[in-house]
Amino acid sequence: MSSPLPGGPALPQERRLVTAIPGPKSQELHARKLGAVAAGVGTTLPVYITRAGGGVVEDVDGNSLIDFGSGIAVTNVGNAAELVVEKASAQLAAFTHTCFMVTPYEGYVAVAEALNELTPGDHEKRTALFNSGAEAVENAVKIARHYTKRTAVVVFDHGYHGRTNLTMGMTAKNMPYKEGFGPFAPEVYRVPVAYPYRWLTGPENAADEAAAAAIDIINKQIGAHNVAAIVIEPIQGEGGFIEPAKGFLPKIVEFARENGIVFVADEIQTGFCRTGQWFACEDEGIVPDLITTAKGIAGGLPLAAVTGRAEIMDAVHGGGLGGTYGGNPVACAAAIGSIETMKQLDLNAKAQAIGETMLTRLRAMQEKFDTIGDVRGRGAMIAIELVKPGTKEPDPQTTAAVAAACHQQGLLVLTAGTYGNVLRFLPPLVIPQELLNEGLDILESAFAGL
Ligand SMILES: *Cc1c(COP(=O)(O)O)cnc(C)c1O
Image 1 (cartoon, helix red, strand yellow):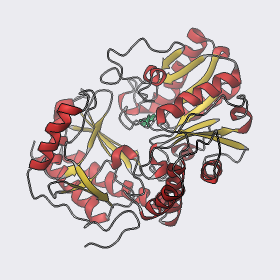
Image 2 (cartoon, protein in one colour):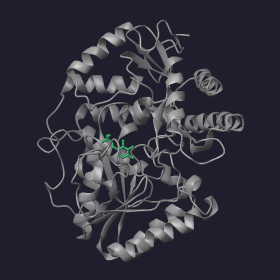
Image 3 (cartoon, rainbow, N blue to C red):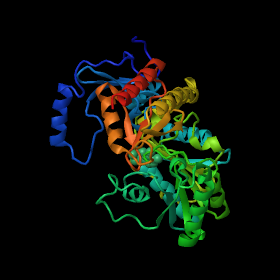
């Protein structure tokens, strides 16, 4: 079963448990971690990884776990994907850094060209590169403020945008992201999002009512003419894979257009084939003014971008944007390899197929297990929301128990959600079908064993 995969090194594509999870070597390393690494840096599952590729991660004890996390939607093309390794290695040997702001190089320009082409809309675009998602969001706000000469930023319930001061303020959830870390940047305002499962008057009313409520708050409490940017994830990630009810996003975009507000799509988690499209906005034909990307862009190397309308992006004076490492040449080479892999392997089609398998199986599980309140998502970005049976009361305890049971059986799953009651599934898009099915079998037994 050890065939070389375009999506990673020639690792046996199998689940293999040879110790308890975590095993003795992982436990030893974890003791070192606790003595050396700041306690605030948590880990979901303390198995220490030595190799990863395709649909598995291998640990120091020789266990091979099925990966339903992709390092949080990063290794869409697989871990150590062939072209990523090849291009990044060549770049590593040629030069590692000059600082694009000092003496530039082609890789940065090539990534900018690729993003300008791949992102929605056929208008003239420009791109600037950064290191992390949070940095991209910060820069989108900087650019929107500079362009509009306005200050207010509108974000949404359940939104997540990062851990820097501004992006913490833009993030909805207090624990663990914001607790004790304030004060936060001013001029950030939060409005409702059309969360179908939890919309009080029913999912069918969510789009209209949530958009009306959001617009009303903007008009009454902020003043539309004071708003520089509206920033939203087309599918909310950390918030629990909430797909805003159809029709909600277009209404918000229309409002932004009518009022000279820059509409920013934060596609950091949803981008790069994750949802079965290059970008999740495409499903409703939305063309954002600016789009932030990171996670899936470079096959695991740190890279982020803001891409958008040339007149907005170019409004900022020379030297106003940048950073020492932004658009590092090795990360850019990895991004070129990653994007090429997505095209070669048609990872949009792969993501759609993963979505079909997952949604079918999970909906069948929902019939059997009444703790599964909602099944949702698109492509390889799928989640289930767990509730107390017969109610919509969130059940974070059962969520944690199911995740722990999966981990014990060698399936890496992540939790999410404002109420901590969402299990989210983000397999690498190159995961073999048998491993996908096996992972879902493990999940099903975890529910059966509750
Ligand atoms: C992860 C994420 C961020 C922050 O990215 P970092 O690279 O962790 O700073 C911002 N927005 C969304 C939607 C994300 O999923």
